[in-house]
Length: 391
Image 1: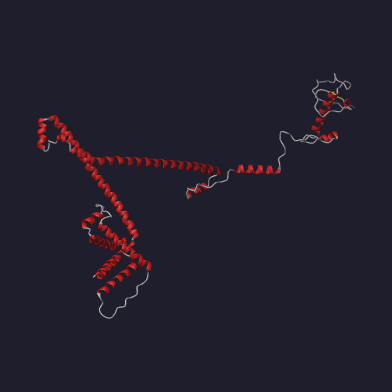
Image 2 (image 1 turned 90 degrees about the vertical axis):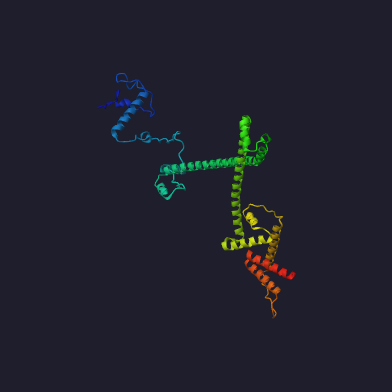
């Protein structure tokens, strides 16, 4: 009994397909054929190949419906399968090290940026809050802090430059105004003297003359009134300038004298003690009186209200004593040798020996203390000894 295989459009007997081989490559589509129009004698190779492929697909589907892959080429045709050629679109296979590096980079990107340090100006509480933030937020805040710090420093630099420029401009303008004011105040006395010596109203010497002028010559009286007002204005400005100059001088003098007293106390430490400073001041006043200065002159000189030249004979005498005192002090400090005790012969001690002993003791005391009071004592003993020798 012959077996009949039904295909989608054409039904053939098995013997009609014997000895016909198919091609694995797809063939062009052929017109539909029926058993009435096509027999085994007039079938073309293309029709046979198409029928064979359809038959094999149907058998494979019925035998193994769950198979995921079709039968291999070598199992069906007894030939080796062609080697798989990678697609050119996919590119060459990646190297192992490159693949590992890309994997690490991708992992680091997935983890996010590494955490950064908080700004140095933040407090302890702020740093604790910083530790609880995620790396992205930390990076954003750190970047904003750097931008803000840069902007603040730039603004501070610009402000400092503007402040310096403004101070220079103000100081320059102040000096110019001070110069103009000094010139005007210096010209006020001459202007007042010139206005006071005006001969136009020389005949008006008393208030009666003014009343007579107002009754007899009203137009000249108006001119005289304007003249007197002008003279009074210049006089008031001159007095105000003198008062301002006196106040400015006193202020500058107090500042300068205070600074000089501090410098003197630094050079002579014993002047920092009130009791010793009082003794020195009294001795200094006595010395100035001895050379010829009056108490009024001493007071005026001390408060800067009197001028004194170094060519003054009294000042030269003071310089002479100071030079001798410094010279003797230098010798004593250079020697630093204790004097030998004087051997006194039996009998009465003469006054000359007493002066010598007093001078020696004063010099010894001065070498140990170096104070001004001991120096004055040396000068007095030296004068007494010189006076004794001159007799």
